[in-house]
Image (cartoon, rainbow over the protein chains, first blue to last red):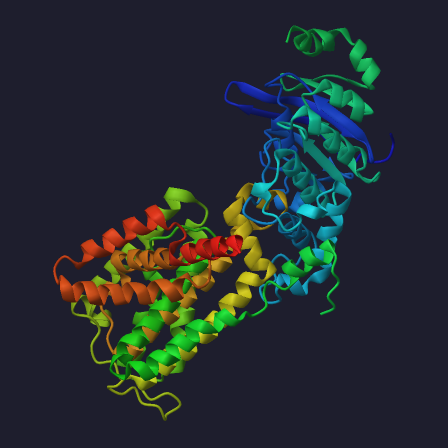
Length: 252
Length: 331
C-alpha cells in the first residue's frame, strides 16, 4: 500500500445547502483494482463520481490521480490524465455511427480533435484503433450503424468502448448494466471482466449479484460517508452493511 | 485503394472515405454556370443569391454543425458589409482587401461577443445572439456620421478587381466575383466539417455531456467555429455591399438573421448543401409571390414554412433523402 494509489480522495466533502452528498470521503483505488462502490439510493454514489471527474467542485478535500493532485483540474484535463467515466444513463452521439462514436473519443485522446484541415479519414490510424476496440466487445458488425438503432444492451457496450478509446488508467463505470434486460447482462459482465489488467476499475452498482461477481473489494457509501470497505465476504458479513443496504434488498 | 471484401474494411472504408468528393457535389456549380448563360439579364440578382448562399452557409456551420441556435447572424453580415462599405466610401475601394478586412473585423466581433455569450446555451444563448445584433444595429443607427444611419451608406467607390474587371451594370464581374469567393469559402467549410474538429462540433451538438467526458475543450471549439462563421458572414455582407454599392441598416436587422434561418431550414440544416438549395428557392419564391401578391407575399412564405416543417422535416434535402432511400429500398 506504499505506492501511490491509482485514485485517492481525502476528506472529500460537498453539500448542497442542507443536503450533504459527500461527508469527508476517504477513498483508495489501487492500480489494476476491480473495486465496487455500493450504497442505497441517495447515498451519494453519483455525486462522488461527479466530484472525482470534475463535473462538481468539492467544498473541501483532495483528489489524487496516480499520486498527483487533480482537485483543481478541469474535467477535460482529468480525462487527458486517464481518469475516465461511463454514464448510468447512456450518453452517446445518437445520430452518429458506432465507429464514429468511438473515433471521436480516440481523436480527442490522440490530441487531433482540434485538427481543422485533414479529414478524419486521413487519420486512418485513429479510425482503425477505434474499430479494433469494437471487435472484442462484439460491436464490429454494428460499426456502421447509427447508435440510436442499437438495442440498449449494445448501447451500454458502446459506452464502454468510448471509455476505452480514451486509454483510461482509472475507469469509473457508473452502473454499467443499468436498464439492460437480465438476459443481456452477460455481455456487459464479460466486457468488464475482460478489461485490460492495468486499468483500475471502480464499478458503481446497484445489482449486488453483479458486484459480488466482479469486485475484489467493495466500498459501501451511506449518506455521503464510507460505512465499510473490504473484501466481498467481509462486506457480506458486516452487520452495519446488512442493516442499511443488504437488508433493504431482502425486503424488496 | 485496395478493396478487401470483409466487413471490417467496409466499415472503416466507408468512414475513411466519407470526405471524398462525389459527382453530385458539382451540381450547384453547374447550375450556377448554366444560370449565367440562361438568364443574362438576372446576373445582379444571381450575384446576390450567391452571396446570400455564403451567408446561409455561415449560419449552417454554427446552427447545423455546432448546434448553436442563433438569431444574430446578421450582426456579422452587417459588420462585414459596413466594413467594406466604409472603406470604399472613404477612398479605399480595392475589393479583395476590403473583403479581407470585412472578414477580419466580423470575425473579431464574433470572437469578442462569443467570449461572453457562448458561456450559456439554449434559449439564453439565443436571446444573447439577438442582443448582440440589436446593439450593433442601434450603434450603426446612432453613428450616422460614419454609417449614414437610416439613409444608408452613400458614396461607395469600388475599384475594379485586379485593376481590370470593373463592376458594371450587367453584373458579370459581380457574378463571377461572388461565385469564386463562394466556391473558395465552400471548399474551406467542406474541409472543416470533415475534419476531426468538424466532427467534434457534431459531437457537441449531439451530446455535450459526452464531449466533456471525452476531454474535449467544448467552449474553445464552439468559440472557434463561431468566430469562423462570423468571418464568413462578414465576407458575405461585404460581397453584397461591394456588388450593390450600398449598405443599409437592414443589413444588421433581426429580419435578416431570421430570413437566413428560414432559407436554411427550407434547404435543410446541417447538410452543407441546404444553403445552396434553400437560398435560391426562397429568393425565387419571394420574387414570384411578391409579383402575384405585392402586399401579402410573406403570407405565402409563411405557409411554405409551415408545410415544410410539418411534412418535410430536414427541408427539401431531407425530403430528397427520404424519397431516395425509399426508392432504393423498393428496388
